[in-house]
Amino acid sequence: MSLDENTLQHPKRDADIEHDRYAWSRLAERRPVAWPGGKRLAVWVNVSLQWLPFHAGDDLADATAHPPNSHPGLRHDTLRDYGNRIGIYRLLQAFDRYGVRPTFACNARLAQQYPALMQEIVARGSEIIGHSWHMDMPWPHKPDGLDVGDERAQTAASLNVLRRVSGRDIRGWFGPGHLQSAHTPELLRAQGIDYFCDSGNEDMPYRFHTRLGDLWSMPLSSEQEDRFVLMENFHAEGAWLKQFAESCDLLLDEAREQGGRVLSLSLHPWVLGQSHRIRYLEAALEYAMSREGVWSAGAGEIVRSFAAQHHATDEAAS
Image (cartoon, rainbow, N blue to C red; front, side, top):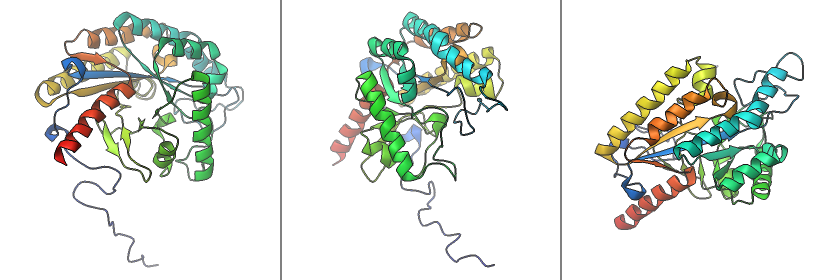
């Protein structure tokens, strides 16, 4: 069988990128960003508040929650329940102690299942972003996963519930497992989302084009995520802390020469909220917040500050 003549043709290929979703540029060559108050490093901490059904299936977006041979899967289900009952409150105490303003990515089902926790999050005034329905359902990245109609309905239902329960106008999104389909950006924009946090190719926000208008892509690295480093790569807690501190140092050094930077930290209460790990998170937060030039802010606040400067640059160039 011969190949179709167009098989190896890539009409959007150029020297740097093969699609038109966003422009390509070197970070070190961009116009410097200035954070509020003359700060150099924006620290944004994302906490994923997730609900794993007691009788989980095999569509999990959480790579560490392998379905057991029999149900209920007490090991995995209760571990995540521990995070929502105990671990999260240790994280909240640590945030308050070191002046950290976190963002909370919430499953809509969690917002229904843990009303006291949601009341606590809402009362704190912290930013809340969408995190789909729950952690065990068909995901759009799978060949047999959601079609576009089902994904549209799932996205709308998730945001509608989260907006109603929280009383907030949810403007950000973090896909469970950083997962998207080719349709996800348009579906998010149609639901009033301004930015998403699923890409790992940047240290700064950037414009992401959709047919319905631009989104902002907000950096949220999995490389420093507690679950990825500790549970999947099996690094020791001390190693995770060292990696975080080194990232903080390097980004501050770059910011002195090249303008503001973003240091992202993705957390799960069932991981670093454990009694034998919480001190490492406290040490990480203390280290970052003790450095000169650090600004702790929610994801949306960082995006808005960045977008305002980007818009000003666009107007000056027009």
